[in-house]
Length: 185
Image (cartoon, rainbow, N blue to C red; front, top):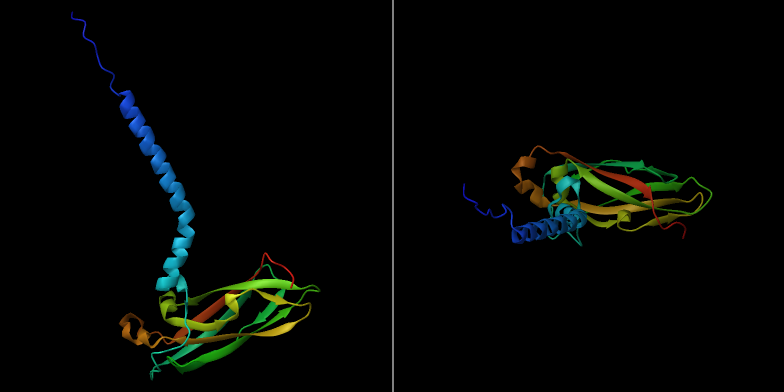
């Protein structure tokens, strides 16, 4: 029998390469985890995905004859407020509309809250444009205070170019109100 020397199946150089590759993979995965939320929010804002609405300064595209009903909904989570949504409105697409939600602070101290929003059907989010909205900033209501919270919006006339949405005759704008980390005035 001959005495043959065998080389190891895995060399130290290869072990180092695998360790570097796995370390790099872990770093990329951690970075992706931290970047996922802001990237997803940017994607939703740009595309209207998930019912995310758009912000606008004005409607430069005009008004079209097609009617759209917009309904309003509100829910309250972790803030001692009562919020009454506006009544539904039916108007021509592209027309600038102003509605008011009515909020009341039921507590005996100032309470700061903020609203998050979405629209349904979700596919209409990229066509729903807000010019002014109480949801853009935190709101502080004093004890027992009742306030009108306006929303100025329009439905983009480009919705008529999306033939997948030809049967849509109503959009619902929903707000959920939460206590803000910053309390008081």
